[in-house]
Length: 161
Image: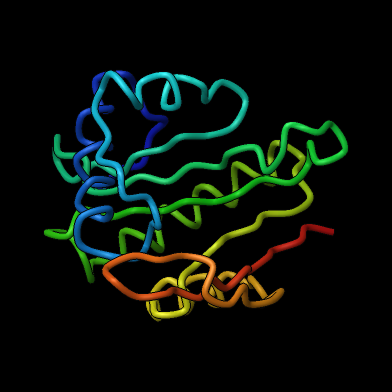
């Protein structure tokens, strides 16, 4: 497996992985399936911050990104992390490798804080974040509604000193 910066030809695979999560999980509280038309602008916006993919052979097996937390300039050193893995590659350590790489890139960019919003039922994601030194900031209770139920969201944070 290799990890590289995502290129435009990876976008369809990134969208496919994301759409699986939209359809099957509360890993994202998005309910709208993405297409190249409605997601390309977002995916193309990663110029300063990383959008990376893991490749297993030629296949995109996962992806991660750091996106700006807020458009207010005082937040410029704070980002939000997203990590998604193709379900056919779950349990193979790909999320761990993507986290390692995206954290290295965050440090290299001189970022100070990484935030993640994780539904409280996403035990594997919470475990992954804790493994990398993320701490719990708080729980937003019943802020999402997906699959006919309210969902709590845990905010986790990693601060670089």
